[in-house]
Length: 176
Image 1 (cartoon, rainbow, N blue to C red):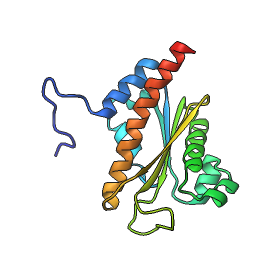
Image 2: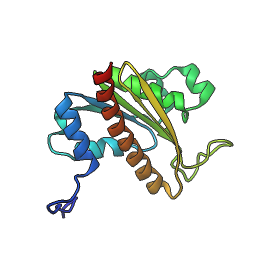
Image 3: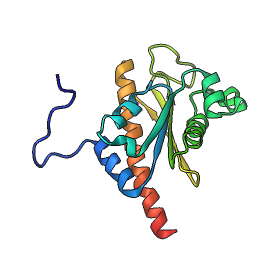
Image 4: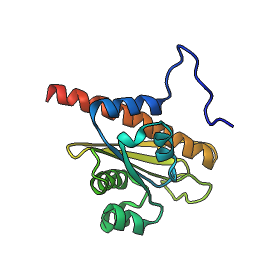
């Protein structure tokens, strides 16, 4: 059984292939730190043949201790903001970038459900952070649906943000 159907002429490449070409062409390496997506982003990125040229590695960090000990997320941030927060997403991105010696780090944290919601943090809440050592960005998303749907939507959003971040990074280099 084939994982992906063959594309015909004129069909757009998958976003993972587009990102792979961008990273490879620009000599940029990537590392990911995933919580709510459980490795789905890394899986999607590495589904592209030749991804070892730009993908340095990833960490699936569900437990706060893993976020703290492997990624360097400050315990004070985890206590103050909670694991599902904008600051933690950025800290995960920065930590995985540093520890994997990558140019860009991506961090994602959220509540895929069906449990885990708290007042102010509903099921479907996801934060995606990106960091390259010079700048970082973070975005909040709220998705609906079941656990699988939220994880898929989160991975799509993160990969879309990554494409935009890479393109903006190039624009910043041109103008900076």
